[in-house]
Image 1 (cartoon, helix red, strand yellow):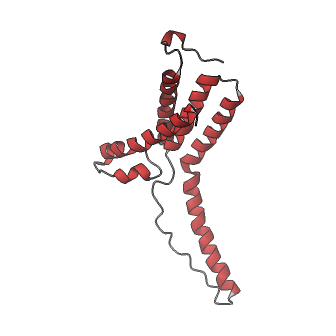
Image 2 (tube, helix red, strand yellow; image 1 turned 120 degrees about the vertical axis):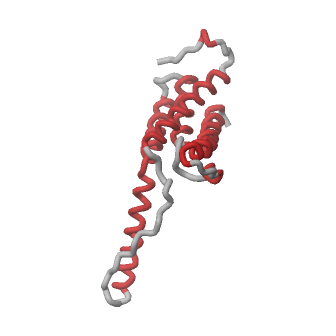
Length: 163
């Protein structure tokens, strides 16, 4: 595997690990299971793609195809993390209710349809915008530090970003 993948995975792990103390600070509740959950501050989705994009930009430059692909992919992932998954869960409840109605129609039973109250969805399925931004900031920091640590010549005076 290449260094960009290692750094992105490290960044995602850091983001997942940070969710536990941040949640404790906000809610005074210790929940180590948050490490394996979705949602919360910071977004590990955003952190991972931001790390990879930053690392590619610094290693290969901004005008490369690698950077363009990583940037667009990252923006899509961050947009999705903000709530498309939550919206999908709500839609699934409606679709399930419609499937039950269709089954009743096919069995020629009474077509009276009563909508069930929605079951409680997982509360942290998607992210709030500030959680995505927090993950992106963490990702950029990990990407920059990763680039500096993996450079052959680590002198900061020779630090350059190609445009």
